[in-house]
Amino acid sequence: MSVWNNMTGARIVLLLLLLPAVLLAQSKKELEEKRKKIIRDISTTERMIQKTSQTREATYDKYLALQSQIESRETLIRTIQDEVSAAEDLIERNQGVISSLTQDIEKMQQEYGHMVRNAYRRKSLSNPLLYILSAESLNQAFRRWLFLRKYDRYRKQQADAIAATRAMLAQKIRSINDTRLEKETLLNSLQGQKATLSSDLVQKDETLKFLAKDEERLKQDLQKKQIAHEQLNQSIENVIQEEVRKRAEESRRVPPVAANPTPPAPVAEKPSSPTGKTAEKPAASKINSAPATATNREATEDNQSFDFRRNKGRLPWPVESGFISRGFGKQQHPTIKTISITNNGIDIRTEESATVRAVHEGIVAGVQFIPGHDYTVIIQHGDYYTVYTNLAETGLTKGEQVRSKQVIGKVSNNPITGASELHFELWHQKERINPVGWIKK
Image 1 (cartoon, helix red, strand yellow):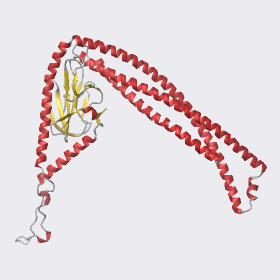
Image 2 (cartoon, one colour; image 1 turned 180 degrees about the vertical axis):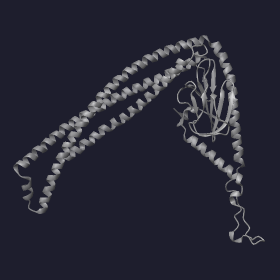
Image 3 (tube, rainbow, N blue to C red; image 1 turned 90 degrees about the vertical axis):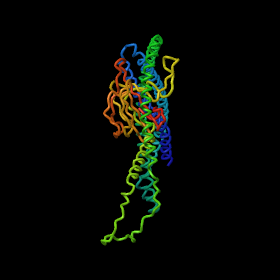
Image 4 (cartoon, one colour; image 1 turned 30 degrees about the vertical axis):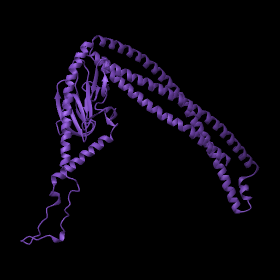
């Protein structure tokens, strides 16, 4: 039984050694997926920078794209560094597993050799059949037969365990060699990304210096945009406030569910008509049919609010690819330090003529054309509203039902700068919310 206990103990130790390696492998896979995603984002931003025209008006847009590019590249460098650290941890862990497996093989081989020698001596000095037949009783003979059978089974299991451990050892050696090669590749990529980042930083500084010389024109351009933006804000606010008001009035018109104190008349006491026919009582479904419909509609809207809130952090991006060029709330202008900008949503720089999609199912609350921002679509999701601005086209009309991820239009392209940017807002009743914590790329 000592052989069986040693073999079982070796397997338990092996599992304890392999478990952290499995967790490291899962973390390594997550880091790899994150790295691939960041590389895709960087490629998208690079295409946008290349498409941006080399005009004075486009310099500011180019600066924003470069800023996002630098942030993504810095994140990529940190991710690659984490991958290198994970690879080093995995190599160290596998080296520990290899050392343990080697010791287990040596120990099991020694035990197996001892078993074989004992078995050889047992078979050479006495015949197993004679060993069974020499028993004093039938019960003792049966127990001796069971002992020999279990002994042979243990020996076979020990041999199988040695073979399996050798195979695992060979696999771990291959794995550690592959990880070392992958680590070298990551280190080379890391050096390349650091060199590219240095180049991006130089380009950003040059762009910033150019913008500093062109500050007066930027202020005038910003003032014009601010006037158009205020008109946009007012239009969005008017639509949403009107929808909130209508909903509040509709809610007040709905009577309470328990407001029916009069009990139904007993069935047995229905009066008969002069013609001898039983007088029909008005159908319950025909009473207060309008309030019942309003109640159903209100319940549906409440369900929409709950469903929308439940998907916080999991709502899809309104566009397939891109980066956030301007965040939510009050922030300092990136190049003119004396000016602060208030953004009611986020601005997403995306591909040329990119399709825009609804982040959740809902009802179109409004469609408007605003000079300087083209089409704006407002979708109601119960108590929540999403706003999509700067659409070149849309086929939606007010009151239309839309599905989640349904295409609602295309982003406009700036003919001067060549930039394509979507303005996206999120409201809860009359309150503006930062969409970043709600949507996931």
